[in-house]
View 1 (spheres, rainbow, N blue to C red):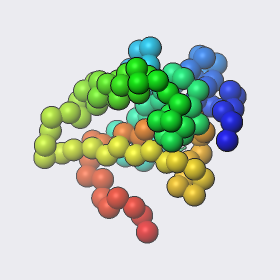
View 2: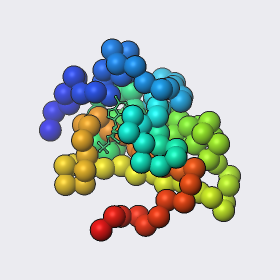
View 3: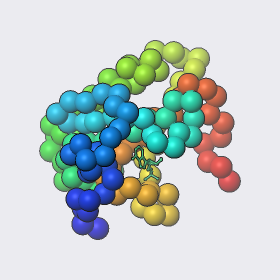
View 4: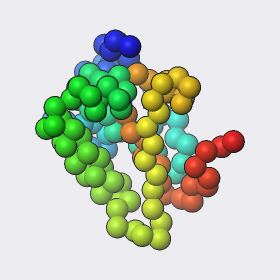
Length: 122
Ligand code: AMP
């Protein structure tokens, strides 16, 4: 799949659509999900044009990949989710329509702030 420069997250990155920003640096942008599925629900996206986790891990440079995951860790800190062993949080990335991916710009969901229940609703 080729990257669609008009996907909603590309528009957020360009500032054409507003977001509730949590964190930003040269490698990543994080913002609150518009339709939260838990008390805390944020999304972390790379600043580069990657369709999915697979695309990101295959095509991004080592610097981009390390930068992205370091940023994700900073987002967890900013959201006050880190270091609470008894509470925890969930990281999730849907890859492809069958997994539920709706926006085709790679992103990691961060869920937290309350008990999250089973991993999959089946
Ligand atoms: P996925 O189904 O994994 O592709 O997740 C896409 C997520 O993007 C969903 O949880 C949506 O609620 C969220 N989303 C879509 N549009 C926006 C937006 N404009 N701002 C923030 N989150 C959004």
